[in-house]
Image 1 (cartoon, rainbow, N blue to C red):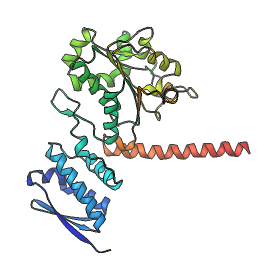
Image 2: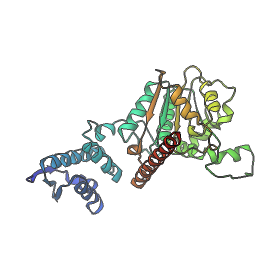
Image 3: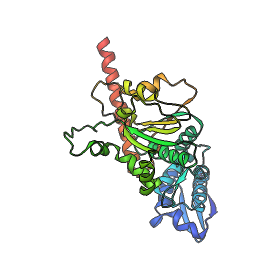
Image 4: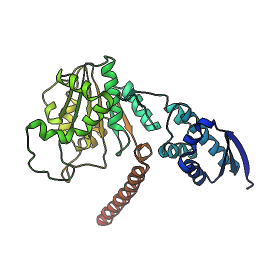
Length: 332
């Protein structure tokens, strides 16, 4: 196959951002798409097979558009654009980037970064109840929190309620000192962290004192009816079926609910069924409820996290296959 070449113009002011430190982004594109990229002043020459250079050209086009919108190009951005191009997806990271949800207290825009996250955000807008299910690092809780704060600020809801089951992550912590709030705060800390970053500590404390923002363990939801509220149940994989049913039947008029969880990280006692598993099976055909299944492709933390999640998925799939084979052998 004969090599061909194309030349793309790269705005000089965006070169450093697009190429990355020591041209690390360029090297990643070369390795992934089997092309040679020669940076020049204000342009790049791409050499390789016709199909490959077309794909590389699309990658650079996406990165130019992202940089033009004021984004700092990250390794995760480059990896995701390459994945979209190789899968011949019609999705565009530059288009996803236009969907701003809210801003942090520092003014940084919060927006979906993958097609999976974009679908998740749109479902939250359109549906009364949404299940966001996926591995760590896919932005399930953070995006739901941003949507809740935006709805609260625009008076779409009157209050925000954040809850999660108070269960230890594979450890027995024993007695914790202090009053009840001190005992449950460690379990709710991730929710506080997101609130402070998006809303600011002062605004959170003020609205919390008024009872307009509530962060509480799931057990506190029993017996309540939650009207005109944006409710987020986090770490739902650690609910029992009874707890999940209790929570789902608290929902009142004018409320919106997001339930997030990672089915691969259950901390329930062995052989206890997860309420999230059961709810996903029971409610899958209810039209008013949306299900967003995020994958390792939607991980937006350090690229190493994506590789770790992918490695565990492969390992767990192999273990499940072996278990099924053992059962089949026993039946014979």
